[in-house]
Image 1 (spheres, one colour):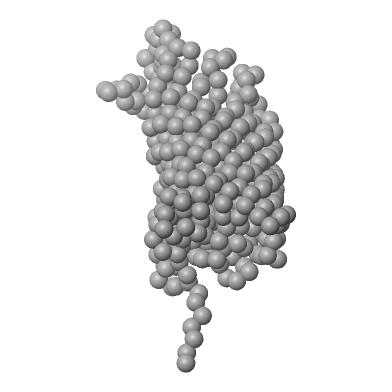
Image 2 (cartoon, rainbow, N blue to C red):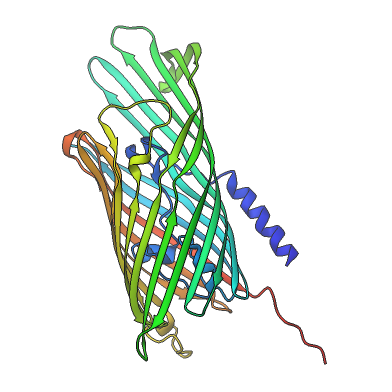
Length: 413
């Protein structure tokens, strides 16, 4: 077991240095970026539902789920995005591939533990505006990562509670370059915000048999608001344009900007569903995010407001015959879902919202119930109204969930 823990620690350390991902969306400019994490692949196929927990999968959205684990579970998720970005005048296609999470869940009787790393928000854009009078370039990258430790406890066979503590860290970098017609030198502004802070999250799950076959499931999760410290730096430069569109600094000046405290807003998730255990399930979930508590890091932006946001999710799964050892097809888990998400950003008096339709399958592999989950989501974000940007995306995501038994009782004759 010690060797396994060492391997896990090495993996976590290697991922920490590369966890931030360029999301390629102009809407990631605002606040601390767009939410990157949408749940494990199993959750995402069902519209992002966090209601369900079982004995062989980690639930990274509700820490109470660790109380349901029966086997040690290693989980890793990746996503490939294909996106079309459109305005009234132009369009572009963007492809990105990213790590979604790396996690482990460890059962210990009625108590279960979890630890891992999640790229939580992401910033990534590269824009250009060219007119007869000027040429402007805007770029940004970075985001906020979450390194967490969680525990879930099974109070009764039907009721579990959990808590998660997280250390949030990362940085966001923005660069704006302006050249004006008839002026030899351009201007470059660079901003960097180094982010850090702690958050805590609570969760509870309840399951109740309401007939011989049917089971009712309820779930609640709550994250209080918390403070993220932003250490801000800014430089202003006079620049000239070099070869291959490179920009060469001529004069660089540091600008004194104060550090700021950002509030990570409170979040509440409530959901319920009904189904037949290991056969089918259908559920619905509501999430409220106090986005009005957001503020930008060290600079003000015109025509932008943060408002409280809601997300609505609907999804479920179907297994033809979980116990059929003769047919591989009958043991495949088919999942599907829908989500409608308000981002909380209002830009030029237009609300920036997002929707997604998802589906996929969980494929059993190897021994001890290990599985590969492959899903697809099609969705859209934003609008072309008011000179804004509409993004249509196709996300192909996959997770590997491996199971093992660490603690085994040994008997001697």
